[in-house]
Length: 87
Length: 196
Ligand SMILES: [Zn+2]
Image (cartoon, rainbow over all chains, first blue to last red):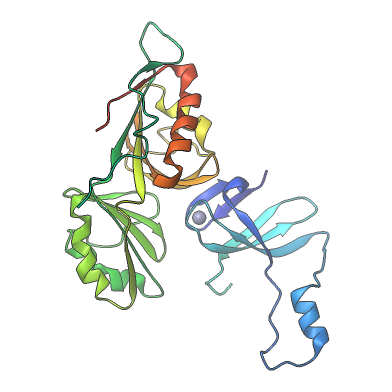
């Protein structure tokens, strides 16, 4: 069980949240024509052992999208902020 | 205007249920329709944009994420950085002024939520079985509220006294939640009150 420190609601159980994917992925420019960049953007993800920056949605709380640091090896949760705020 | 019927009309059976104790049942369950419920949401600059509407009800600001604010019969919940909920018969008074502001999105949700009341000496113990929140008085003082999930359904829980919690639940899930709460209340013994 992860305990996630929502900046709005405080520390809550993982059951209130939904995982939203890798938060470091950046969409290519809309006029980008190289297929490989779109392939990477849509399908290809790293699978790191260690620190990971990821989106979480507090779907059964304040319903805000969060960006959170999580260690995929230890499950240690680090810094967490609202996705709409610059980090 | 048609009468709003409680979604529990078919399943709420007043009476005494569950375990029996010398001190009487530890829980009392009841429900009440919300006399008014309005959500105001916005974007950046929400606090400034919503201020005039809240002022008509006597609120000086949009409040904070942990504690409700009271003004007359209206209760204000800051449910997100750019969203508030207002309950009470006077909540509808903000519809016009907030609705006229293009920076705000206003919804009348009066028909969309039901209030379920959990009260009694074992109210804290029952709530602890329902949601992953610390409901002890020092962690959740009177007047504080949380948005969380019960049975995977999003609810807002407002503590109004040491032994009373008011749950704001979606009417479409009220029946299932009511039965789930009853199952969990059985070990404490519980009374179900007549419809309000
Ligand atoms: Zn939250």
